[in-house]
Amino acid sequence: MATQDVRANQKELFGHPVGLYILFFTEMWERFSYYGMRAILVLYLVSATTGGNAGLGWTGGEAIALYGWYTMLVYVASIPGGIIADKLLGQKKTVLVGGIVLVVGHGILAVEEMWAFYSGLALIIAGVGMLKPNISTMVGGLYKEGDIRRDKGFTIFYIGINLGAFLSSLIVGYVGEEIGWHWGFGLAGIAMALGLLVYLWGQKYLVNVGNLLSKAERSEGASLGNMFSKLLKSPLQLGITAVLMAGSVYYLIFESLPYGLLYIFLTLVTALMLMVYKDLTTQIMKDRYVVMILSFLLVVVFWGAFEQAGGLMNIYALDKTDRSIPFDLPLIGSEVPATWFQSLNAMFIIIFGVVIANFWAKRKLKNKEASSIFKMATGVIIMGLGFIFMAMAAKSYTPYDEKAAMYWLVLAYLLHTIGELCSSPVALSFITKLAPVKYASLMMGVYFAATGLGNKVAGVIGEFSQGEPMVVNLNATGSQMTQNLQINDSVVDQQQDFRLAGNVYEENGELKLTTREGNEPILDFIQFKDSERSNEVIETLQEENVTAEDPYHVLIDFKQGDEKKGWSGNFIVEEIQTDMEYKTFWGITIFTAIFGLLVILLLKPLKRLTHGVEDNEAELPQQENFELGDTQS
Image 1 (tube, one colour):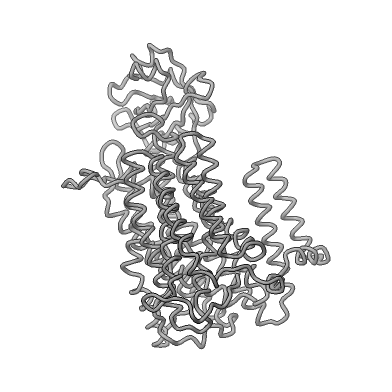
Image 2: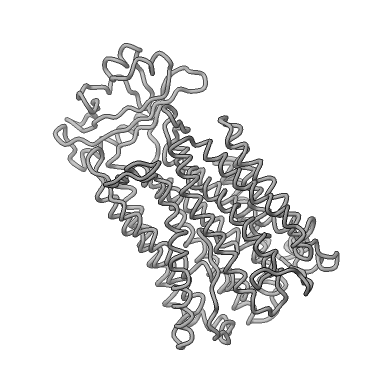
């Protein structure tokens, strides 16, 4: 995305253009709103539908799946956001429109209706897509090419980003978790409104940055229309695209509408990538392009693991972590809110950011290996090792007996952040060095798509860790519910949603289910929607020798349908689910370690393919730029 030169006589403050501080506070409040909402979203989804702070009562798998779609679309929306800025409005006006849309989106989320929930998420996706990629580019536009203050300017800007992210998890997290989820959503909207007001007030300091380019400048670069037109004249590329598109359309019609649309999108991206490779004129450009593709894979793998933070790890903090402390704190008492763990990443970035950046810079000055692809691979490995601590947390958790200690989460977030500081700051910079000049903007769009795909992969992994839902229906009269199932009279009379906890074991090849407190048999009142699933449970219980003396534990969140014709819920055996989470954490660790090590083993040939793109970089940078869970810099 192009930027325009600025006038030499722009007003300055503390040695930088005043516009920098306008963008600093705008982005700080925008990140405050985004990460605040991100901290409470999944917890709101999984919270029970009854009680003082009711949520939607979704299962962990359902919540993580939505989180994956949401975070993916936030990144993918940066592509049309950049196009709108480049071709229609300019960056400055696009940021303004994005801010307005964000305020409306967060405001609608404060309304306790399902239409408001989905509408609010859609507006936030659109708003972030317009604001995020363009405001970062505007920071660079404040400085003339070669201005030595530019790196410091970005450092100041990123302080605002991480300060907003850190404070939001504490403040919005507390309000949402302790006072009300929709109050938290509303507070995020107020923060975004503050950022928008700052941006509007500071327009006089942004006169010469982010304006719409001239028609000639807008016509520069690759044309998507021309590329797809050339695709029709390229038999090999067209054949590959046709096969992928046929599979995507089949999936769209017969399997899943959302995934079918995703596969169609990925097919179109693949077609563009094939056409770019065909258009490259020199072997050097083609070699660098191959390394860039591998870099995209590193980005997908990294974020596919890292983004468990807002989903699976967030739920773990809520349900399976002992958050009690031996003293009382003002407002929160003796239990740390689960959302506060989301602030650890930003806090560790602030603490260790300069240390990690200087470590790599000094390594390079000593002529030790410090190439971008080595940093990215190392970051993937270190981040993956953080899941060892999550595996230890899962191992130490015993339902209704012992929860995991908080330090497991803290250590996991620490390694995740160190991994991020190794990988994230250099990823986009490295890709822009490798990308052909003609296709630089297009490759930035593909980079955002890769980041979004990584977020979606994170959702798929998190959803898998929760197991396939086993749906059961409740077949009990009101008196049976109160007497046999020990359900409160008011829940039955008002047909409210409720949670049933029980013990489960296998006896003589049959499934046995009893209440947790009185050991009253209750299986007669529960019917599996798919009888085969109950047989799967019996087989698992037999394999693990689960008996009446040492039973497993079941949770069923029963909910009434919209027509109030009866209760149904998901049958979750906690020990089985925890074991799946344990295996998932180890699986992430092993895969990221193998993938990262494989890249390092191939480092020499990969560096040869870059043809010395980084060989002349020897200066010690003042500061590398990085952001919490976000690479759109």
